Amino acid sequence: MHTKSVEFMPFTLSFFLFLSATLWLAYGLLLHDYYIMIPNGVGVVLGMAQMILYGCYCKERKKGSVENQNGNAAASGGLSSLEVESGC
Image (cartoon, rainbow, N blue to C red; front, top):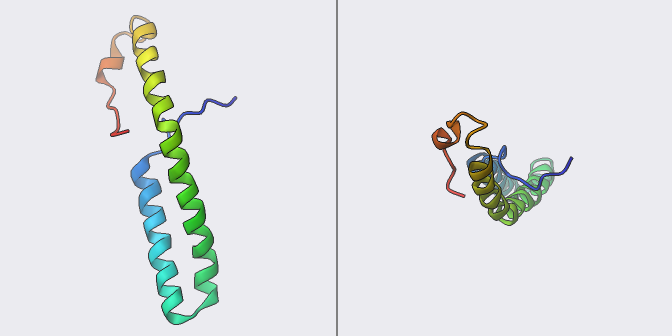
């Protein structure tokens, strides 16, 4: 089932993994070490793709959470008001 939701993908984790791969790539470039550059270059590209997808589907999450709160507030026992939304 495809939901197009970033509910379970924290942005801070994605960002810091991207940042880590970027720093290791820079270190590999300074040393001219291909064994460090290649895997972290791939990590930078995939991390950037992950953050772009997060940006694309972040708006979908807001729409879905508003509909969920309006439609299922009684079914969830009012717990939807206690949920903490991320900065998305």
